[in-house]
Length: 293
Image (tube, rainbow, N blue to C red; front, side, top):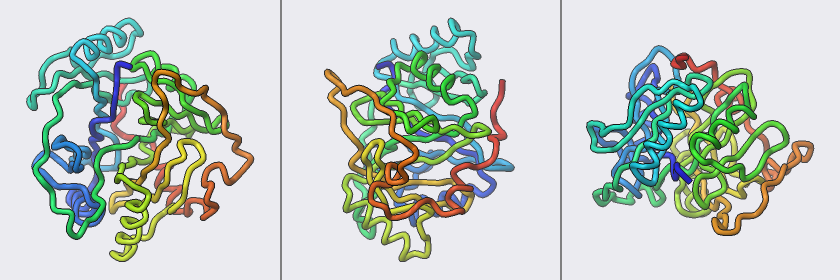
């Protein structure tokens, strides 16, 4: 697989300081000068800049090698998409290329050595987020976008949830990117791995103690089998604590299947409830204002 991970998500929001405070002080990411990181790598997982509305500045995907970055750039040109930036070394030493997908979303594919993080105190956070587990995007062109991402990045379809969602993997975990059918392109949510089911529950309880109620969860998804708890930040960004995502045998993966949407327990097998009206509105979002042809 050419792409092996989601490196970071860069967002524009009306109040970056408010999101930074929530994601750092409450949610548990670690603030740095470049953004907010997890405990597994010094590279930021979330970058924030100011903009008139919530939207995606870009999403950075991690490649296995420089050659993989070059291969993506060649595929972009072969498919007639817009190559925004030729492969080269950025200011932080990563070898990257940038492109616009079929919806106009800016995507980056980069290769960089893992940067060892400085030790982080786990007090008062017993279960700080480690890394980005997955990103979910809303799209009006579900099948076309899924097909494009598989061709561009070597993603593989793990499962489908009716005709509403496609789950795409780029490593041994069930999905690193998922796509949901919607009327427009936008961010649905960003999920962060915290290392254990107990961690999801402890973090969820801790945030509730700080006055932030989950907009969905805790619960457990059918597709992916992961435990989840979703929260909304002050700018409307939906972030998820998650763990126990299904692991595939990369040498002999199981066949993809379609999970039926007519069984409400498939979306949350614990039966702890559906997303709140607020959660649905936040995850649906508004058309992303930063898309470009």
